[in-house]
Image 1 (cartoon, rainbow, N blue to C red):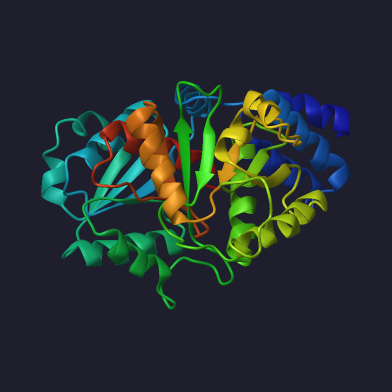
Image 2: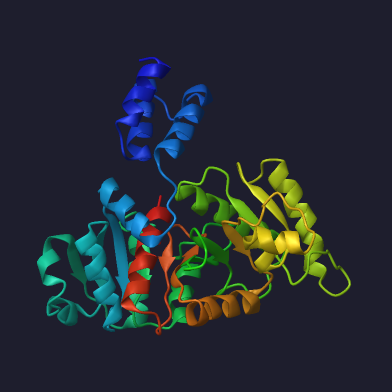
Length: 350
């Protein structure tokens, strides 16, 4: 089969993974020639319209018609099972509820989807976390989801050196996705919840994760802003900004794949060409950022809370860097927000 025939078959497929599996089978080996794989990957990105809001995300997942396996840790609250019921109804997850079996069995919203979920008993929330992480480690779950358990307790199971699911050398970080009424597309940002003051190595991985996730949403060349309160590197007062030129250089050298990284920029200039021009600034981002890398957790968390409270943003969030994405919502998050987080996790899951 020649490249033209492969491309023809490729455009008939919805799932990139399916066609790549076929290419591997055709070539009889795991290393597919770049001359074949690169144009096909580009074609896939062109086929997949860029997802600019959560409705488009849900429509895409419906079209993909692939259910990801979600291990739900101690679903003793009301919102977690409700979000799972919505995702089951939408057709993009299978659920394994770890713990609280009686409560789940009695849940009326879940009963219509009984063919797509199971229960595993657990003694308590910590035991549920250990069992759910084991499912991921054994390849029996694609996504981890937090129920009524303290985040620290869940992370203890995820980060356990002997039984956890964080590959050696990886960085665990929080990635948020926001649909803001006044912005024309989804905005990704990190880190609002996990890393207090990222060092250079952590920030590099945050850029890498952001670029990969944005590309999963159909953007071929993500625009990523390194955020700060001003547009100048200031090693005296803000030593972390000295890392920014290094990260930009890595992006230009292809470290993160096809993407544009620039900074320091304030959040307004990163997302508004008008604001940039008013300040007399130029940037290859052109005020059209897909992702913001926040300077620290304080800035990220304040930004997260501000856009939801004052701008009416709908949000989703997950942890990336582990063997699978983990949905770790706040107790205050709505069922809808948790549902959106599951949808984003389905896009992030390998």
